[in-house]
Image (tube, helix red, strand yellow):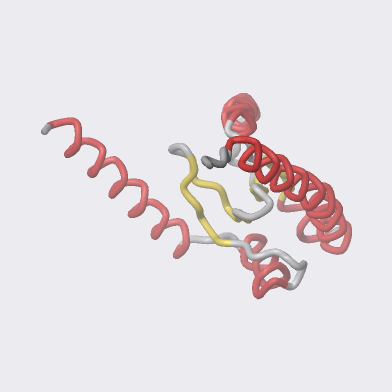
Length: 142
């Protein structure tokens, strides 16, 4: 019984942290969100998504793409470890600095669009592979 309670409280703790992060967003996160929300780039993004215990700034579930906006408080070593963990579960992470968001917004958006195109190709390939595998596993009984 203790394990389930611990899992519940850990999940609740992450959701509370997510809510706090939504309230305390940086101006750069708000600026980027205003440009990518409502499928402006052709993909649906959510804010402050919890994935395997990490909270990413923006996430597209269909394309398995996470976007992080790094301020001066980020630790490169921890960020690398976090990126590796997310990559291991199939989530690709794009990182941008506050300066890039402020000064090179169009370049940032182009990079996101380029990654979405690559992810679209991988998504279609993944769907085709799943379909082929499911067709192989179906056996007809006569």
